[in-house]
Length: 560
Image (cartoon, rainbow, N blue to C red; front, top):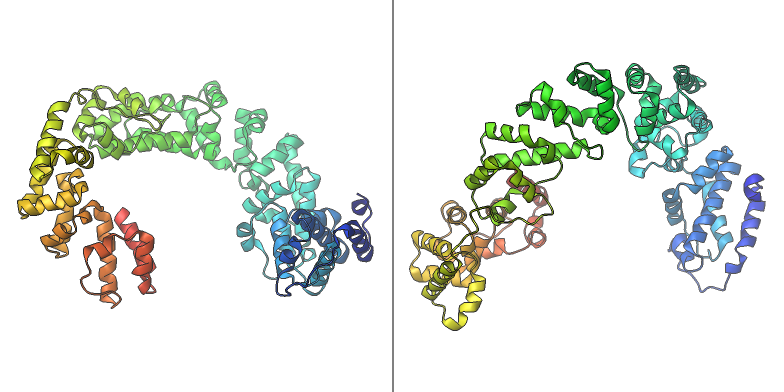
């Protein structure tokens, strides 16, 4: 504490620090001079001790050598760990065996290699390098060159706004740190003259720094007059960012929905402050527009707002959108979708439905059947939310299990499986006997002989787990578009288990490489499809400098 209260000269500071860490001195073997100071001292001093010594050296440099004020020098030395670590990694010393060597190395380096002081300053405000890199001045290196920045820093500090909160202000309203002498203080005083207390003004500045530029003063005053400063103080979050124009517009919209009844509006946002504060009310406006397009009248919109204060409006909109896309995905008519949302949106927004593919696989019903069930009882969808196990649709789970298994067994016997192989074969061929038979007949309809079709499915049983339409699309692409003969499918039936998207991306990439002389002519299907994406990139895509870029473009296009 004596060091901080009564800063000493550079020489006395170094002697004091050296005395404190003298117990760490031990004879050391020669050190590779090419290793950095941080790595050579790690084995001799604890890392926390190295950081503490670095902070002392940085404080001494900023305060005694550079003449920065005590508050700023202390903050920059203690709260810029990334800058300190980077500095240590730049130093090289083959005799840094204890604390005094660390201090001397840092001091010597800084005296001959002055650092850009804006970097540790911005980091001490809580900004990340990616955030402050564009903010570092190109024509300045020392903080003392930017007088207004330091002056306004102290104005905020004296008003009770901490350094990390200043970082948020700097990101959102950088210009306020460039105000000339007295301007920032006068703007803060003008907010107090509006009748606001110091605690309220402090939080207001942190949450909405743009009020100091005068852009949203009128809207802010109007909102506070409507809801009260206590409500604002209680519900504003210093971690959030707010736009008073958007909040004012959302509040006016809610007032219109309530027929101009101020007491009803206040009751509404008292219980659900997120309506006007979450993304400054933007999610509420999006939700209202979404419900209006689905047929809700203006008088019904109030009833469609999230009923619980703990429910996020943005999440509600996301869940409703996901449900809408699901209903569109199963080909439900637009007027039926609107009917579902008008009567059930209050609980549809509370939880997220599973993906459409999950429904079709587990409900054991097609899209028409799914539409019928939802139209008859929309609350059936409550059973299909994330985290719940999906059960078959009513009326579709009564199956002749014995008959289906007998048909499947007969089909496998026709393929040539013997009784002793039947148990294993039943596990390999998934699906009902009728479905397997239908897909097998489809393979024969392509022009394959019965023997060739049997050879294919026995080699790769997964072929028959796909619908006939999916198989037809894959065969059409490989045979008709790419020109591979059917005999190729017989020799490598496993190619049909890959998705059509994978096939198109891989072969498009292969053709692109072939046109540029980077791939052999007419490779086997297996060579192109079996590799993982990582191996495919290594073996093929990287053969051309523009290959990776084109490959990513193909994948992005195929996923649309």
